[in-house]
Image (cartoon, rainbow, N blue to C red):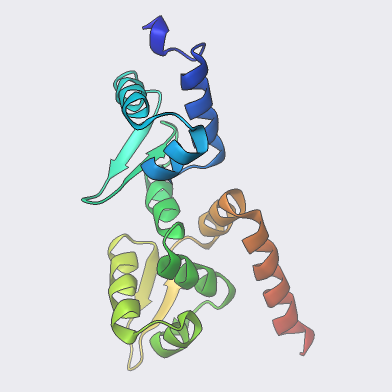
Length: 171
């Protein structure tokens, strides 16, 4: 037990990296920590068993979080680490009640890509679809989305604030 405790320098290093980069994937964790693959895999396994970290797995990727991370926030962080999802979430933060075509134009992605991503975000309840002749989309939890973006990428929130200020400076 002590071998995998917080006094172990490798465990301490892994915990520090996950704390400063919630939702970091295995490859990034390996590159950042400079711990060899087999050794990192072993430590991750023991840290999960000891409830020092939690892992959210998909068929192709694993993301690492501290145990006290809010389950809703886990899905939010994972999607903020994906380019198209992040673009959509940040756009909706600055432009609530946006239509599909506005979102698609902003992301500069194919309509099918945006449609699949929007469907996924709605299923995860990160985005709410407001039905109508032309459905609109809004963030399910604007405050949590903003604070999470601010924690993960502080520069992004500054850009959103500037864009928001620019919008209202012409009124």
